[in-house]
Image 1: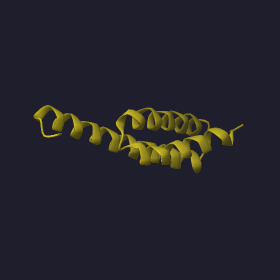
Image 2: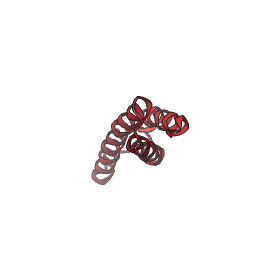
Image 3: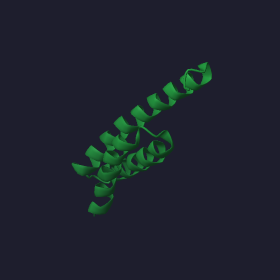
Length: 81
């Protein structure tokens, strides 16, 4: 039996990950949690919300990684402040 709770949680975390990618400290754990929940529910046979949460989490994770890399580069070259 597929629980709708984890599907909804994956979707909510995916949407939150798209908001919190600007702060990598928050973006990483949120998107990874959404990714894990979405993958678990997709493995059980859930479609729809679990897939949407999974995809949104991947997009949020990529944005978070790009933001982290840009911040690290700017900080290393002294251009940040």
